[in-house]
Length: 121
Image (cartoon, rainbow, N blue to C red):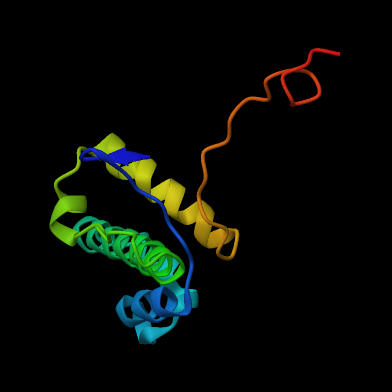
């Protein structure tokens, strides 16, 4: 998803899990749903912190895999200044990656032909 002129991607990492657990009740990542289903302001800030942690995992890993990658992670301020629809869409994307246990978000392209190589058979 594009935010402020750049593609935002997510990755579930141990570092991200630790950062998410830090904001959860009893520092238990399994209680994240309790956190985001409570008071509005607390839930929204928790969702923002979740997205920041998940994007940080992607950005740091991308830099590790490609030293030329320029990290530009999301910030809390940046996420909290999104409109509601964009915020919610981005959160759902981050949740999807989290639930898939770390699969990175990617953009898929339609196959060019029936067999995927440009030929229509």
